[in-house]
Image (tube, rainbow over all chains, first blue to last red; front, side, top):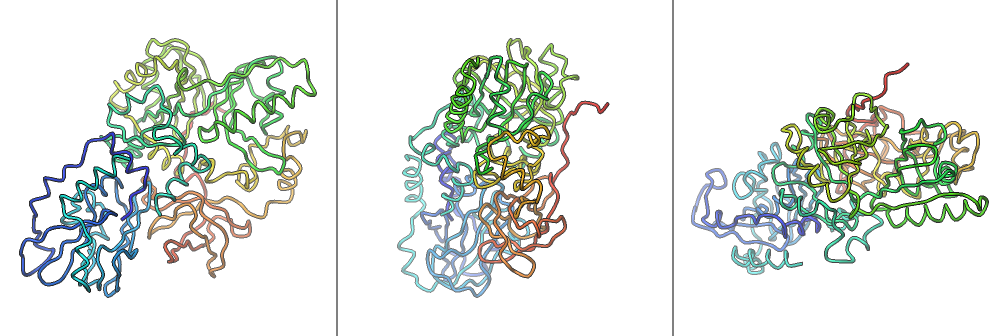
Length: 165
Length: 403
């Protein structure tokens, strides 16, 4: 997801989102059904995250930083089930009052589920971007791709460089 | 990608200026905004809050419609024009009948070019026959200053003995606060000895606010609500802002809510909805070309504009509502029901007040009738919309009683 540049600048002057509070992964019941092993969230430089489970399914969402920058999300356009995505493909959009922000897939693969609850209630992205506000699930085509993504720690560092602009 | 779209939307025509330096100009209230949790952005070269940490844009918007919000609009260009020829001079560059205005009353008008295109929109207030107060767009500050001075130069060619003094009030010297919403008058009245009950929409008076003397209070705004724009000596602006915020019905609001409020009110944003490529007639602002000026035909672009008034223009600015789907933003393509391309969206957002998507754009006049069904293209999909009258939400101006 791409954050409007003018929004990124704003964080120089406002309170930092607290990422540490999410670092201990919570496993929402409804997100998935089996192999409930700990899976770390990995991040893109466009502020999406993906959490890859043992069954090869990746759950995709946007970061707390992104939802904070976007503001109230009022419309979520998500990729349809069975859509085949390549890593970095534009695959949907989130709309707030002030802006539309495109979504980019953090990994390649086939969409197996989208968050219908989110389509009904887009504000879940703001209230719960790592749990109820997940976007879609994708069956990974290439497990190696996640090596291109950032860990939580790296992403935090990345945000610092963004703010240095 | 999106970043450029947003920048275009907010800062069109001022891109270079906006990003020429790391930090833009600041208003006298900059530290105050930061202290109050303002999320600061560079807007047209000015560092201004897009929202504050206590309210989301939607909530701030709704709060304004129900209570009152305080906006720092000191980035706008305030100009004082004095001298006995000031009315005649200023009429040579705009379309308003300033002579016909009563003292201490104003009107929206436009600077036009020889092709009838709009160079900027502005509020001109006639204080008296020899004094005008003008507020125009921040994004057009440099342009407007040159235009006003060039206009004076031209005027003096035919009126060499003209007495006109122009002062551009810098944000460092003079702040401008907008207090907008149904509870604005009540909040301001508590802080001023001026009787606001006779200060009607589009009229202006000088008075004290929160014991600060020499404040110009003009009953106008950019939200569709009752409200005021208060021009204040810059050094006293924090004091006035704090005094207004002492009222529980007043909260700070930023550029985000300002944009969605003005869009719901059907008001144009220069650079988006009106540009040098649009005439007042095309922009559905024919009323700005006032009767006497039409008769005198003595404003820039009069030939083109008067012909359009007579024969109608080929295209027209319209309002659109879509019930569902994503909001159409600036640049989205408008199609007819049978999917012929008609024009483009110039502003659009989800409307916090009505819960639907609202937009403005230009279509051929043949497709401009209220109720006409259209389709809007957003990310390669077409969504239904319908031509709707503007404002999208009813305006609540405090107008003078009709006699």
